[in-house]
Length: 92
Image (tube, rainbow, N blue to C red; front, side):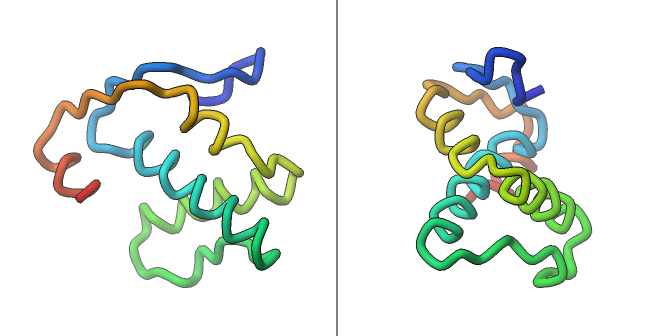
């Protein structure tokens, strides 16, 4: 849902649980770390199964040569609406 055929991505998110917002934030962080240190995200660095999936997605993106994908998406998004308090707490 965040990868569009024209490579632009969304400008607004209605997020339920904060997953998409978390992915974008962590994606920017991973891209910056990769640019600075050449390090890929390590899914085994966490015991949280959901976060492992996030790190796997980001690692695959970087390995595929998408070194600015999440940064471009973050620059384009102008608003996020979180539907649940659970999602708000996750993003805190």
